[in-house]
Amino acid sequence: MLTPWHTFAAICGKLVFVRTLITDSTDEAAEIIRRGGLVAFPTETVYGLGADVFNEDTLRRIFEAKQRPPDNPLIIHIADISQIEQLAHPANENAKKLIEAFFPGPLTVVLKKRENVSALATAGLDSVGIRMPSFPIANEFLAKCETPVAAPSANLSGRPSPTTWHAVLEDLDGRIDCILRGDPTEIGLESTVVDCTLDDPVILRRGSITIEMLREVVPAVRNVAAADELRRSPGTRHKHYAPRAIVILVDSPPEPRADAAFIGLSSPVEGWGFARFCGGVDEYAKEVFEFFRECDRRGVVTVYCRSVKTDGIGEALMDRLRRAAER
Ligand code: TXA
Ligand code: MG
Image 1: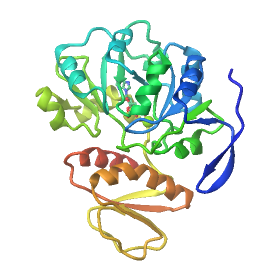
Image 2: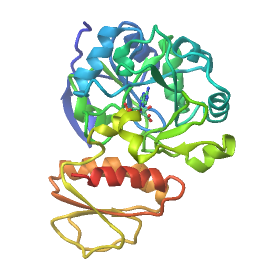
Image 3: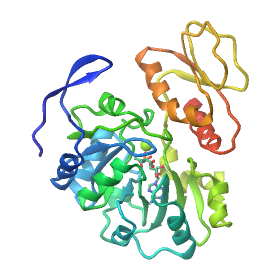
């Protein structure tokens, strides 16, 4: 058990008392991982909650800290492609092509797992999801951990994924040992997950690496069939990405309401209780989870989200918005 730290953090210009260590040092954060602690860290997609994948006690603490259902497997993060062989059996040709083209970056490949990877990390599956982030601070931190790092998104289960360090603190203060403080994440939506255990890769979760980008490298890539999604992509069984408010998807801007919030790609209109107008789909994707959190902080009860075209990252954004709107 690590000693809890007591410190103050400046959030929104206020000094608040926090129980989790907040550090800017990748050395300090990596040492905590090596000693068996839980560390949240920034990546280009969202913040992750990391633990040494070979330490079962700490893996258990990930599920406790997040209140995560045990049937939802973790993604294992690496600093170098050579670490894949510690985790998975040799990849097939298509998987190798995707790894070569998109690592490091916002792609998770699912491969056949080796026996030494704990069933706790993979939720009992015989496969393992592996990702090599491209964010420089994530890469530096992971290299210093000297072990692959299991890391789900660093939020309480069901809440929007954290794209800032203070969103991590909001959900997990006192429940984890350390937050490696970095910039807000660049993409704002979680990685594209591709099952590569069979010859033809199947997209299990959409992300900023789109099907078109994947097909340029491996033309056989396809989306998971709706009928197979729940079985093959355990993460989709659980409610995700949503604020506490009711989320309503709209194709055109509704009449502004003082008792509701709005996010979308349109020019500012007066009259919303709270609104976020984004300059493009990339900005919308980057901002949407923090917008949902801000709605919760303000006690908003209804949130209108304007739909976008499903090209580029628009497809992943619409996937998250639809899931947030499910009740
Ligand atoms: O961008 C990301 O992927 C972030 C950052 C931290 O890397 N991580 C993340 O982790 O979003 P999490 O735990 O929130 O989502 C993991 C997803 C779930 O949908 C899970 O079902 C899927 O990855 N997954 C992990 N291992 C899998 C496996 N062996 N087979 C099928 N799906 C798997
Ligand atoms: Mg998550």
